[in-house]
Structure formats: structure tokens, C-alpha cells
Length: 368
Ligand SMILES: Cc1cc2nc3c(=O)[nH]c(=O)nc-3n(C[C@H](O)[C@H](O)[C@H](O)COP(=O)(O)OP(=O)(O)OC[C@H]3O[C@@H](n4cnc5c(N)ncnc54)[C@H](O)[C@@H]3O)c2cc1C
Image (cartoon, rainbow, N blue to C red):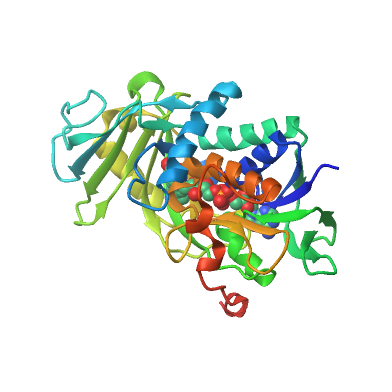
């Protein structure tokens, strides 16, 4: 009989696990509260880098994942605009420049490029909503199931092992194992499992319809506002003729319902003002989306990928912070190996062992 694995959360991480499990003949059931790619996995930058995690515990995972992104785009017909691109660093200030031509036709003279950070061999981009929903559809063609529902508790067998989930409406979804992949909402699973804390860190972004006004060059900037405050915007021109720009982060609280995430007051206006200063092409382009989303962060900055200590059949994959889109495929591959073979072969998951951090006390959740 095929193994049935219940995956809580339809973000890039849950969906990538579903894809790799389904490819190996297991039956993943993704339970999603709001919408597949409805949170950060549909709104993030989708920037990928081969070797930007060198010297850290993430290096092997990131390199493997960069390779897998290229393979997945090739194998599945690239419905998510996977593209390789040049990547540059630069700086700008609101009070500098007279909006004349800059170092690129699409940049104003307030921007100085300071160096190249990546080449088409080492940096790439996906459109995250297309990637996450496309991978879910591909998993479904291999037998994965998608269920709409809010996971509210865990089902256990007599030995205490996880054997499925209970939804908010009382329905149950049974399986041979359960994976928590609810991004920053994984902290809610500390009510049912001994898991470390996961926090949400908010970011704002805009999408412009730029067509061919901006070439395939990603840009990481330091931008000083007239007030003296420094923002670190990122600009990613996508294969679909849009350009995604982010800046303005905040620690505002994570709403329990992923559908109610909204931008902080004034954040998008600030971002728009910055875009007009740095680029005449952006100043002239219509804005097609104003977005906000939360990335999942752990206490030591590394993801939680592995078995939940002390509870058979329970797994977690979250806390990927700024590299969740990059690291989704290698996380999915490693989790499928761990669940089906007992150990991951391609990457060493020891660094990401959930047991390395103290379990969060859910009483703190109720009181906050
Ligand atoms: C502004 C910004 C820019 C970023 N840019 C990049 C980038 O360029 N490159 C990169 O690699 N990474 C980037 N990231 C990081 C990346 O987006 C995240 O790490 C990644 O999306 C996390 O994926 P996830 O599947 O863990 O979580 P999420 O995408 O948050 O998905 C979790 C899912 O769980 C669901 N859920 C929640 N509660 C329940 C419940 N009770 N029952 C069922 N489902 C539930 C939610 O609805 C959601 O769909 C960026 C993040 C932000 C915020």
C-alpha cells in the first residue's frame, strides 16, 4: 500500500515535499487553510543563488536546490518563468541625482552600481506564485491530493505516533505520517507537538508592469531616504514582463488567519516614492500589486527540517527565512528521502534537526 502523508500548509515547502513524495509513489495530502501560494510563497522575490550561502550550514542545501530548480523547470515545462540573470549591487540616496540618465537607461542618476554579485551561472529567478501552484498541480498529476481546511489538532495512534490531523470543522484527515509546513504559522503547531518557536518577519513589495523597459538584471541596493534611514531594496525583473521590488520590513504581529495579512500603513507609499527616485522606467510603469507577507524565522536563523523529537510519524519543515523559495526543492527531496527511506541522502540534515532548539511553551502563545 502507498504511504499517505498529510502535509499541513500549501506554501513552497509543503508543495515541494508533496512533489517529491508523489514522484516516489507515496500519496501526499496537502491541507491548506487559505490558498496554495496564498502567503509568502506566492508573494516573495523568487530570487535564487547558487553559492551565496557558502561558509554557512545552508551551503549544501542551497547548491543542491539551485540545481534542482533548473531540473524542475526543464522537466515540468517551466510554467513559472524560471530564468537565469545577471545580478548587481548598488547604492542610491533620495537627495542625490537630478533624475537624468544613469548607468543604465532604466536607472536614474541617483543610483551608482558598485559591483556584480552574480552571473547567469550563479543567479536565477522564478515567479513564486507560478512556481508554488505549478508544482502543486504537477504533484496532483502524480496522485497528490489538495484539501482545503484549517489544521487544528493532531490524530495519534495508541503508541502516541502521529496518524493524521483534525481540521477546525471536526473532519479528520488520516495518514501514515504528518509534516508541519505552515511557514510562520508553524508556531501554532506547538500546541500539539514539541516544536521550537518560529516567528514571522514582515516584508512589503510592489509589482510593476515594465514589459521590456527593464532587462534581465537583478539589483540589490542600499538606499538612503531623505530622513537618513537606509532601506535595502531588491529589484527583480521577471520573465513575464513584470518587475518585483521590495523594501520596508517590520516586526508587526502575525495574524492567525493567513488571509488577513495586510501592508503596514504608509509602507507601500514609501516604497513607491523610492521606486520613482531610482528608476524612470518604474516611475512610468503601472503597479499591478501591492503585497505584504511574512517569512518564517527560527531562533538561530536556520530552518527546522526533520523528525519532531519524541513523536513517531511527525515531521517539520519550516523556518527557511529569506531563502525559502531557493531551498524548497532540496528540502522537498530531503524530506521525501527521510520519510520514505529513513534518512536524507543528498544533504546532511543534522544542522537543521528540530531537536537542536528548545521546544516553545504554547502557554506563551495563549497569553500573547
Ligand atoms: C518580502 C519577502 C521576499 C522574499 N524573497 C525571497 C527570495 O527572493 N528568494 C527566496 O528564496 N526566498 C524569499 N523569501 C522567503 C520565502 O518566501 C519563504 O521562506 C517561503 O515562502 C516560506 O515558505 P513556506 O512554505 O515555509 O511558508 P508559507 O509560504 O508561509 O506557507 C505556509 C502555508 O501554511 C498555510 N497555513 C497556515 N496555517 C495553517 C493551518 N492551520 N492549516 C493549514 N494550512 C495552514 C498558510 O495559509 C500558507 O499557505 C522572501 C520572503 C519575503 C517575506
